[in-house]
Amino acid sequence: MKRIEIIANRSVEENILEALAKEEAGKYYTMISNVLGVGACGPRMGTAVWPEENFSLVIWCEEEEAQKIQQAITTVKEKFPGEGIKLFGL
Image (cartoon, rainbow, N blue to C red; front, side):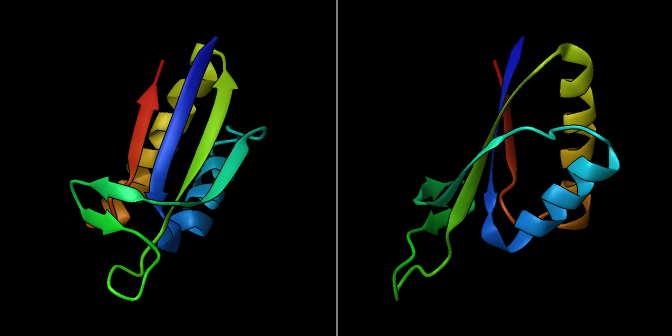
């Protein structure tokens, strides 16, 4: 079993969910909305000064599905290179 965490700008949330559906992966997940913090792409604080926010998906899956998830995220990252999309696997 693998734990996959995806943290990304809310502006690409729909794109990520569509890419996962296209790969037939990540069907079961936990979504954490309004994730705030500071990363390499800058602050995402949901305030007037730093208005952007992130979201996070947590997915438990087998290795084969994890590879499909990684492919889906790679596709979205290629389309939106400046949006701060991160994938972590444990």
